Image 1 (tube, rainbow, N blue to C red):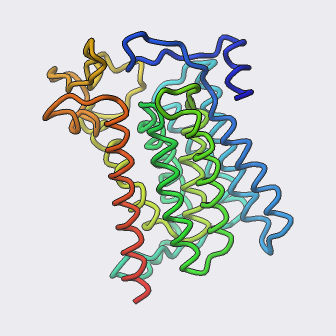
Image 2: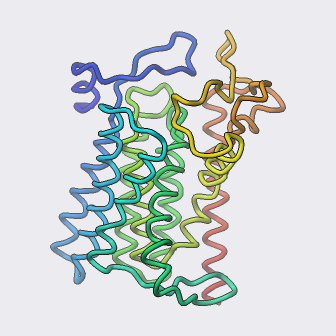
Length: 307
């Protein structure tokens, strides 16, 4: 992977802490996802009746991913990262590619003409960007779950006759899957915040532009649950370097067990290994399976809404 080789030469790498040998892995490989999404968006803009939609989509992704680049070279605080991620919603707001009447399953449309642009859109972009970043803890976890969720959302957008949104989600699915092939266990490259923040923002942008907010949240339920558990157990927003204890402990045989310390954050991983230790690939398989079922839930909800 050219980007991985470049990053390694530049000394941009991370340590794979879930391996006994602690290998050094090239970071910021998520730039390949962003480049892929940009290329797809530029091509689709020329064939779309609404090129502004794709412009807003890729600008949102770009701004969020640049927060990840900035964080690598100048360590940002947790609240700084949240504020900067919220700025990624500006292209959507400026270009006006949103509909302030979101539809809730079994309830119908909500009229949020004021709250939607000033609260809902920035919150959704920030939440999905950071939640996706927080699920990127194992080889293939972020890329794999994103591929599955985006695939289901592509099908759903197609069924709802949303051609542009279908192409946006399909772009996410293709780009994250291509990256997954290099990021799966044992990882040859890490995404870094540049990739995870960008992918999360891509989900948010597609959801807002395509008016699929709730369905997208359902498809990403395990990712959101992991983020909620982490924030709740930490008592608020904290950056990774501020967390003194890890949720799991690496054993000599490569298994991961739950950290019994009360100070360790509660995460989805910690719950999965609470009963017995698991290997990293087994934990990721659980993530993927949970995301598959949440995708089915989103698809089922779509059928019920249409019916």
